[in-house]
Amino acid sequence: MSPMRFLCDAMLGGLAKWLQAAGYDTYYASQGTDVSDRYLTQKALDEGRTLLTGDGGFLERKPVRDGQVAFLQVPHCPVEEQLRMVVESFRLVRRVSRCMECNGELQTVPPGAVTDRVPDGVAGAHEEFFLCGGCDRVFWRGSHWDRIRGRLERTFG
Ligand SMILES: [Zn+2]
Image (tube, rainbow, N blue to C red):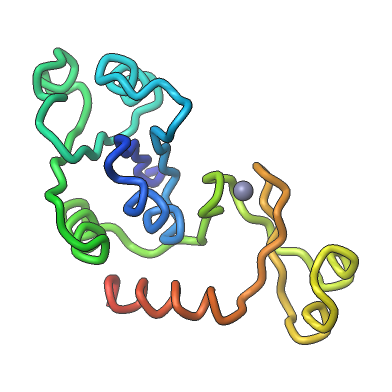
């Protein structure tokens, strides 16, 4: 069975990033994109995404009402609690992280492949680098990643 995919409404950008870090393909309705309930419901339906939303407005849309689009209303609370709620509701397990900038898939690359793209000293200090297939950014497991991993470990156990 392929992993669940999600769609977060405009109120849940923080949650979207954490689901991406946990390895789930998550579309986020950000500024500059169509954030209407109609558009997002149709997108969730077309792409088989579970709709995560901060309000109940989506319940008025037919595909949600009819159960064609899976739906979870997420309350206003710290993002760590929101993430835990989603994880428990759908019994998610941690997967290989996706890009928290663009939701792209990350590919592992050796240090030599990115030497000229990372700050001095970084290439020699890390064994593994990750290249995003979506936005072409390079990532490595520095202190920022340690904080992310710490939170994911607390949530997923
Ligand atoms: Zn990316």
